[in-house]
Picture 1 (cartoon, rainbow, N blue to C red):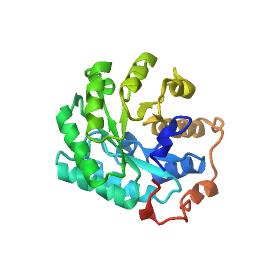
Picture 2 (picture 1 turned 120 degrees about the horizontal axis):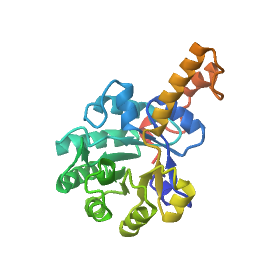
Picture 3 (picture 1 turned 120 degrees about the vertical axis):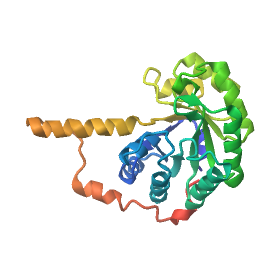
Picture 4 (picture 1 turned 30 degrees about the vertical axis):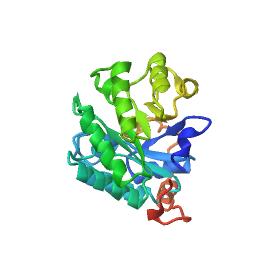
Length: 265
């Protein structure tokens, strides 16, 4: 099911959650698939993003999210390890509990991993869990390192040859660059939401998946502080705040058609 969402009439709009409540609210709003945001998961637990420290928190969240009546894909940063066996074990564990997809990035702090290293990680993951949709992230534009179409395509092609089911290029925002990558890559291409283009234009370019990344988490932080300041200053509260019972009901949003281990692939 999750694989098929990348080949629908319109791009898969993938909102990224950071805890069960945010994911359950998005599922209740009708989204067919939910991703996690590594920044949101790490920051919510007092950890830095992309430092390989949030493995336990990520797996614990995944175990809760597979209760939802939608597909779940999990951002595992760079695999939380440099050991191929440990990365393979992690992906196999996520597959066993019902996770439909993963993001695996090639950024390492402010640098890029050697492509050969990333290829080995992708192969290790697909060998242990071939059914999981592996979205291989090329961080050339995100980190501003080798931020060009040729350098990005060199990595993307290697990752596809290693078994990646999709290619994610965060930071890719120019229409001509997006079109060039899509034309040269034989798997679905994923980009972050690009306000200047919008979902319709991205669809015209051939983008198959659009992620919100950390946007929703950052928006939630802004809303939290804005609401607290409104209370302090005696100003009107923002509109649309859900009631207690509505939020409490999110914890009961379980897919009764399957057990958690069945997944929603």
